[in-house]
Image 1 (tube, rainbow, N blue to C red):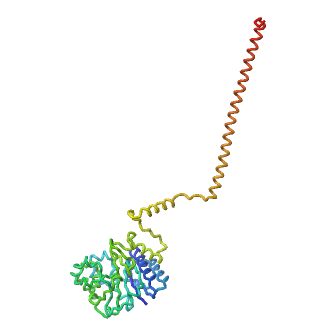
Image 2 (image 1 turned 135 degrees about the horizontal axis):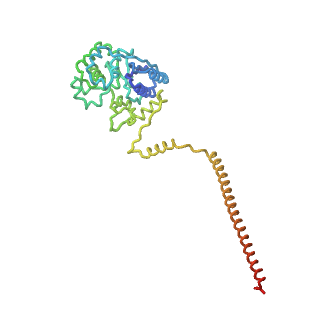
Image 3 (image 1 turned 60 degrees about the vertical axis):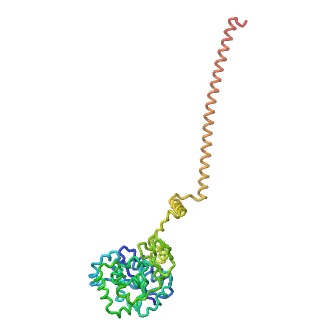
Length: 360
């Protein structure tokens, strides 16, 4: 059985979701049985814990949760380390794996990785007595002088995002925890506490693995998102909508209980996808426009409107005809009366003329 561990602080509830996406990427690609170990603190809400448990159950893998509190002596020596505020206390929980997880070996993964391989391939690597297997840090060129000041070798300096621990070998190195404390006492200005500490304590007996097991995403560079394990170690994480890994992240997140919650689509780049933006705006406009009636309802309504219109037109014609008839009748009657009065006058004038002898 493959032992797999993740560790995180979940203050705003987002890192449990990111952990779920990372786990789903492992589950969907691995045929072997896995046993999952989650190192967390009291920031992990019971609701999110249950979702992680549901995810493991859906893929038929057991999962165990370990509430972690850093030892008092470690908290004391770290009190002067300013960079801990950037990396959170949860980043240090991996240092306690030999004391917390009851297993002989364990694969540790950061929550900002996406796995595209059957992780059995990493699990079956023979460490040949080494304390751990890790991948050379691909960003070492920018910090070589910094790590060298702390007595670390830039040529063998490894990244702590993907690790294969031989926990039994570490436990036999009985001073491993005291050596960690001594490192923090000697170098309170360490910029990457967990990673520098692991390199200091175990770097002398570490097996460097294939770079494809921890392939860094570098902004602006051509990126192969189908590498064995892709690590979004910089400021732009895979859950950032602007990240090239956002689609891969969402594809894995859909396999988790978080898939039922609304997910915002990645924003469309204006400079490269005007057509898609136009279609999106058209779809939004159409969504809020009033719904058109069906053809059957439309025909019934139109027929009713036509009947009403015909009645109005008929009534209007009848009204105009009545007014015209009334006006014409009045004019005719007036003309007849005028003609009658004119005839009477003419007749009276004729009789008067006759009687006076005008017409004799």
